[in-house]
Image (tube, rainbow, N blue to C red):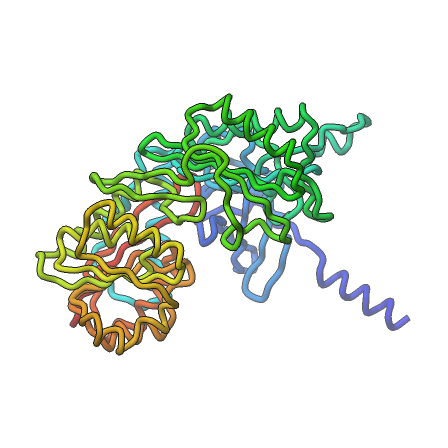
Length: 478
């Protein structure tokens, strides 16, 4: 009896709540929108636009907030637009497609300013208006699609009496469901021939009996498809196989080679691990080159299957120009480029500097950086590989010189506190901090605010239709 009473209390405690006529007042982190519950607590929503008035069913209850979904709309926001993609609302890739682009930019800029002020407790100059993307669709140069033999089915399909036989899919993971793939008819993120390539790959595989991957049971031939396009017009296609059937593998690769003669680099990999990552795998070139080239201001950058390169080429150019402008180099400076990747920023600013030193933890990226510098005939850059907090030490400074300017472009987690401390120890005149996560950027800048003043802030939108945004901050020594 006592146990029955305990479980009854638990059920009551966890019961979902419904709030009526909630006005959605703002957009917050991770693309969620914000309303207020009757008790004043925040509600984070996933399917609304600021300005909507909705009924909400909660999905989670925490001490300070709720999470929920809108179940009915009393009125729609004037910030709404009609989504272009038929998969919107199911695919999680473009969560802001139902919000006008000018409003997307407003909320991105607001998030950056809020993070710098609330997390970093920083005094900010007047923030330069966010730089929007000229292309709001078909702007990505790299897409990865997953194969599955158990595709995501619609509610109508599940409830119908018909036997569903076409279960193969090539597309994106349903948010929060690692083993369910949405079969994509048309994606609005990458330019042609991306959609045609994906559909032809899928159709050929089905017609010819190639098996699609089952992530639960780890079997099936076709695992993933990667497509990279370049501003030079070059095209890379890579298929990741799990089960290795040479006849089928060669059949589908030959078919793509013949159907799409514009493919510059046709690659494959046999990956029988539990996960899809390819960084520890051997990439095999089936046809053409094992790389493609990107170009920026006459500089050529070799891109292979494992290379990191900003996924919006046009906006990357704008981002790098602004970074160079913030550094304001006169030609006699020693510049350190931390987290240099394939050395794109380092080479982009080299002609304005006396010397540039790039540091990166990924050995393959440094190999590419060195090869790119040689190809571009840039002889005033040096690249070094190693974990930043270990390599970027006093011995390194003694050997390679004290930088006048530091440019840092860390991953989403930001800089390790030891790296921040080393920058403070070195005390260069200027630091240009490029970030894809203004929350961790703000955390790092707070550690530096006793020694540096924030002089400029410039948000750059690299990813229209999503909540993601880049930010550049210029720091000058006090």
